[in-house]
Image 1 (cartoon, rainbow, N blue to C red):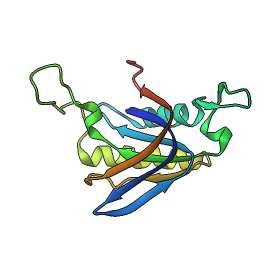
Image 2 (image 1 turned 30 degrees about the vertical axis):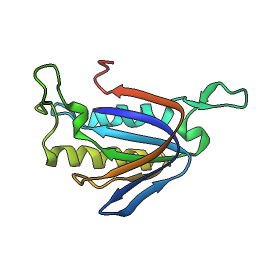
Image 3 (image 1 turned 45 degrees about the vertical axis):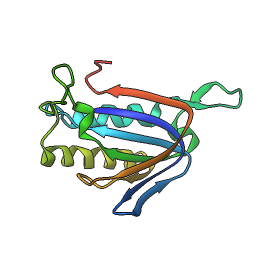
Image 4 (image 1 turned 120 degrees about the vertical axis):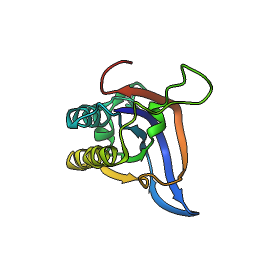
Length: 149
């Protein structure tokens, strides 16, 4: 699984001109599921994201996690994180999981985050979404459950 994690002051997802999800201070995560991913990848990434110390403490140092600040989490599925652009000009998506498999692991990831006590909102799987966010810092972190970066 791959994630683009952004520290946000607020974020929302709109589908068909209607806001379907909205959070305040917390993290916005674009989440891609790969064809080789398993539940273990979801466990690793959910724990990593919930405990990632990218929020400022009283001294202004990045030392607090989403759990520490009791922040909110917005998760948006994004298969394009597995786009391969090394050849030609059009991305290939062979490394992305098939929709049914991806949906299952995406849902499992959401459940894991909720079970940690996080307030979790999400986009609409396979929908054409407009994601709006207020990136604070800006702070943007790339994560991969296979630890390739």
